[in-house]
Image (cartoon, rainbow, N blue to C red; front, side, top):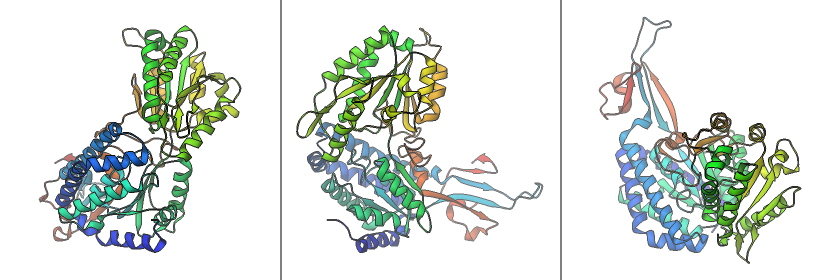
Length: 486
């Protein structure tokens, strides 16, 4: 049932009213661990509901549930450690010009966070997902706008998280859920919402981003909108292992029916015999991939229309034709085009836009200069991949091409494939616009930073300081004192 404006106002106010309950770091960490435990205990029902609504399959959803629980536990560890507070203490120093007063800095939670759930990850990027986990870890109550593709799964997961809150002594309203398009708009405009996280389309994300910026008091909007995830295959790499690269590309671009945000959607492959062999293996791999069900008919219709329009462009061929396979399914495929068609503006520019689903575009290049010219025209991405020859074989183009790819994305891969995002402290899942609307990551420990802001206390008596900044460090937090780790 879609939430009215009055209902959105009620849940946001309820969330704000319980924000102080999240101030206790130990309680927050216990809550996150309990949420992971209860999600796993309810796993059978959650996976059954998610599969019924998304057709992603039990195997995929079982892995996603494990990832979701791991994210919650990882953020519990972040909260326990306390380094995310980024405590800095500089003692008074009259010898400096100008003199330094006593300065003590740490980070505090922003307030109520709105989370917009993703269609393609009903668990890991939805109600119990990374945006929710990181915001709760930061001490921010969360209001989730459920995705219409999996409302029952969203309700089930929300009930689990609210039960986890109650079990650990926290108010259930630290996590609330609303449904409906209008509710999502009301949420981003609500004056008590302090930040938002979004995963979805460029069109929808940009509309919410603009609304967040247009508020009387603008708020941070951390949106993941779309990504082409380019791949460059060097000549020496194709000569050395064309079959391996072709098979790897086919597996990556069709994984999950091509519905991963990190799907390699654009690939630069050299002309010549080695490139031909790569495409031969890619053809065999993609041809052997069965048809798949996309998340909803809107996505399916956009995919079918998108590949048809791209295939109709001059000099575009379809060695394996993607498109409709049945009333509810689509078949995987790929398109090829001379890279020269993409070095300047024209109708082929649509090939440089994401097409969500099991398709990729392979551009055949004649020179490294042609590769550079195409890369210079690409938008921002979550990932960029370089397939290069082994060090023993040597690859003189590897270094300059890696340098050309680095400005395009937040995660750069060498001799790997971008599908699959490890939840690790060093991970970065973000990139230049339109991949994301900020420089932050939505995966990994530093995702917590999106929901915090720094505050400095100057010349403040010890009795008035928060415990995190007191001289004797009663909470045992990692911190820098006078520029040195303490």
